[in-house]
Length: 619
Image (cartoon, rainbow, N blue to C red):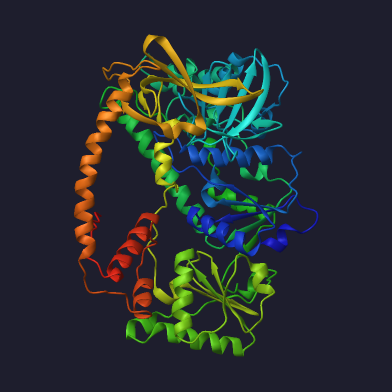
């Protein structure tokens, strides 16, 4: 794929994966083997056909970013471009390319911008107004500041206005709300494929009546769109908002195409699913005579052909663009196809050794020796950095020499053939191509059960998040006591703008706390909590602090005595047996979370310390 994408005469290569899981695996593999490629992902909606819910905000953001980039043909990537999409996304029709390209709004410091017009544009284009920006697709207005998180941007941005003039654009962190750098300009793209401007609303109202007859007052979809409000799942009526929709092929004009060999079956299954859901919706409308069982307006589906490509249509379009098929199988000679054999083969599985009780790691070492004897370089692909390090230690104990951790394929090409590379490459099956044998973790240990990883944060960040505070919350300042949080405000200090938290105290006194000092605050209660605010410079807070410190010191003395008595006791040291313990750990079929790894390390340290353990672990 990488070599095709760099070929001359084309805008790039688009590869169609069978599904989202395969797409994610391709992204991981390409980041390792071809980091010099620019990869653009175009996923499908993550909801069922004719659903009552919209696609997730994350999926919408990724789609809008990809469609906007492709629609603007003036955009040229500095790297060879590879577009990855799926069979489901291929079938789906999209908002017209000129809408995705023409809706972009380019902003730079010095521009004169009506803030009300900006807020209206953001609402019309799918952004949700919130008190504090945390996720893509959100925006917040506070005085002369507009925070927003646009699709495709790595960080949200803070627009600082002086009157109607955009004074500065700064990126900021969603957790701390601190600015992280200045930007020269930004481009805003819609956050939804449904643009609710006057033209699209008028088009929707007309098309809705043409398709389904006069709308009644209890038709929630019609009423919401008519009033310019977003309606959950409105994307499923996308054809009613535009004169026409564009296909993926329209967006990808001038690209080479490659498809996975499972795509044809995936398209057939998706088409069957679309028809089944459409018929179920249509039958429900017919049986209830226009009224749902609960009295609400029933779901009135658009024709499948207006929102999706048909199975035959997909086949014909792929044939027209000369799509290459990537398959592990040799085609029938009578088909007359031009075949390029990459000589790739599935890697060896060690399932037989696992089932028979044979030492699987010794088998891996012997297999690597045999492959190296045939002129092959050897790479071990692990699922995570932790499992890579464990495999390195265990394989070394079983005789595999010169193990070297690498970060990308280029390092492997330059390695001594006698070395064995270890890489974090989450693939499900190893493979063999001329000159390279890749043995993956699942070949050795069996299938892994991978949890969806949460966004990593340090525990301290939860206390230091300005985004965790809402306007009116009661807070406690370490030095000044109980106050009320008013909001974020940018003030001029020492000739430079600073982001501060505005706090209100008794007597309407104000305190501006720089966001970098937010660790001085803690939450007291909700905005509805009945509490007397402290007075800035008063003695009441200091008196309460002194009294509390005295009580804490008394408690600390008791705890110190208990801890000292425990430290004087001894227990048997129980260090884990090296080698056997590592082999045991590698058989754990899950990827450990950060908290699990920290707890495991702490318990092992306790067992080897020779002191009674003082620890409680709750699962």
